Amino acid sequence: MNSIKSENSFRKFMLLWSGEFVSAIGSGLTSFGLGVYVFQQTGLASATALVMLLAFLPNLLLSPLAGVLADRYDRRLLMVAGDGLSALGLVFILVCMLRGEAQLWQICVGVTISSIFTSLLEPAYKATITDLLTEEQFTKASGLVQVAGSAKYLISPILAGYLLRISDIKLLIVIDICTLFLTIASTLVVRKGLASLRKESENAFWNEFREGWTALRQNQGVLVLTVMASVLTFFMGFIQTLFTPMILAFADSASLGAGTTISASGMLVTSLIIGLVPLKKGYAKILSASLFLAGIFMAGFGLRENMIVICTFGFLFFAMLPFANTCLDYLIRTNIENAIQGRVWGLIGIISQFGYVIAYAISGVLADTVFRPLFVEGGALAGNVGKIIGTGSGRGTGFLIIVAGGLLSLTAIGLSQIKSVRKLEERGKNVPENHLE
Image 1 (tube, helix red, strand yellow):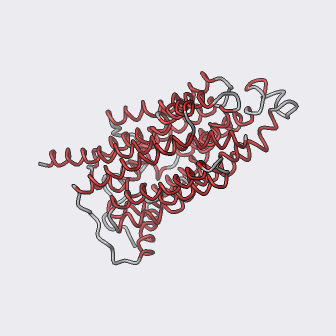
Image 2: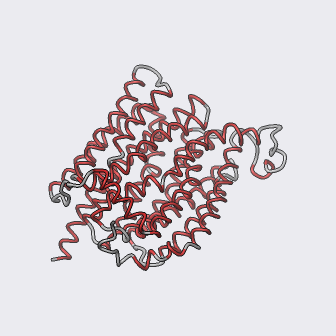
Image 3: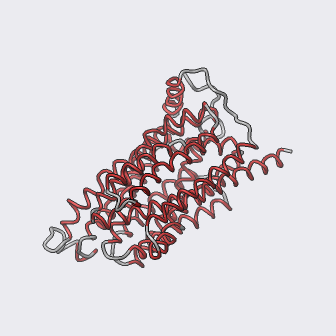
């Protein structure tokens, strides 16, 4: 009976996952299209980074609030509300474009609105996975979740590059809006067959938020891992922000789409491997090793204005991320009680991903005002480092990515030396029942 129940639960997860997979493709179309649109309008990496920041920051800041909501109310309904209301921002951008060229501030407003409501999704989705699956299925599910997440980098860019040849960005936004309806439908079907495991709590809202923080603070290993993750996301945020400006400096949007897809296929390959052959031990070691190699490959990504070099190192960089994400997910998930996972995941999200916020805020400015002048004709590094990596308007951006990759590898070495993180794997199967104050 338990085996049959487990299979049924995994089928429900697969239905939910399918909706998120389609949604990721849609959001990836819009993300790619807006990145190209803004850079072609302004020619500035900082403008592209600003749009990325505003698409990300509200989601991040509201994630602790969304986490508490995920523990108090129906997690599936929260996912439906997040998907449905996030379409408002897309509709706003679409209307502005239909009336003429959308201004940078209008795009910023639209992505901010969408990000605010998307914040409801992540904690509810992660906690729902815990509701549905057994601990033995966690790593398999994590690999599949990352396959869905990689769709925005793997499928969306090459599809968007083709669609932009026959139409324009408005078509990409319309498709994105349509995918949300499929996601909502799959979530409602899963909800119909899955009773809500949460009742509205009598505790004050702030008390539940504080309980989540207490659980995180009292588990030293999880807290250290979360803070270290923030340092790591800071460095990885540079390649995410500067990927588009670096390639568009010497190639067109079609090449950008193809390069993004080829690079992201590394994430797909290793995500599928993890989904088919789940990791069973050595999570802390695999985490450190994968992040160290990711830094090396990230540095290689910025070496030359050559699509073969970029795609090769990009593939290897993205191939490391599913290993790191799966290990992080397992080490945290198995050390936090299910009853409070929504609010804890919300807090972990805001702390661990705050590095992205800083990277998005400064990387474009650094590329435009500091590193780009170093590699143009007469620049301070054009005659020495420029002989190795090349010169031109995009080479400063490439050098900034190289520096960030090197620092990522050094940080991974430091992470491997932290005892409290290594001990999380030993404690994973023995989470204390009453560890809250």
